[in-house]
Length: 252
Image (cartoon, rainbow, N blue to C red; front, side, top):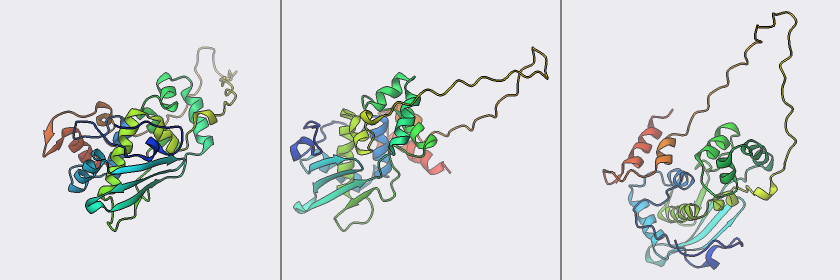
């Protein structure tokens, strides 16, 4: 990956950002992988292949990021230039602050919330506990000024570039989602609950058990995202990608 992530919204001073990973698969961490699979549904398609080619050429430039928006200019076939935008509502500060309180006792979650590593656990907490996933659902997420319907090669190209950037600096995803560690507000610890002692039972009789909590489902292919590529080829793609598509199709 060429260029460096600057403090300003414009990355690499607006110059082209080139994905230089030698493998066919772009995006290796769980956040990067989930972003790719959310936007580029079929990575074995010709659209995805053209997107990878554009991401590896000097075709994606003027990449900028702000809270809720990622945008870039993508030069496609015959030199035609399009504007691609990823738009998502920022995570509400109250949600991010509440998750921060939970993460204080978990070193790996803290590392993810500070943008030092990608964490499927944090994505799981955000998605299923707070209904505020770090990787938004695909509906209304992407827009391109070309005439193509759906995810075109320009959208795929920016997706691969952003996924590669996230692998290099996970905090990029947090910046897009409006999750600023500096804005985390410390709240006073909740008082410890003490089970009252009933005078109606003997001293060795336990109190009533609390109701069982509902188990949280894992995202389809969560284990595959943690394990990464298998290096086994099936039908022209990696086995992990083929299995993830199968799991997604079978998930109600």
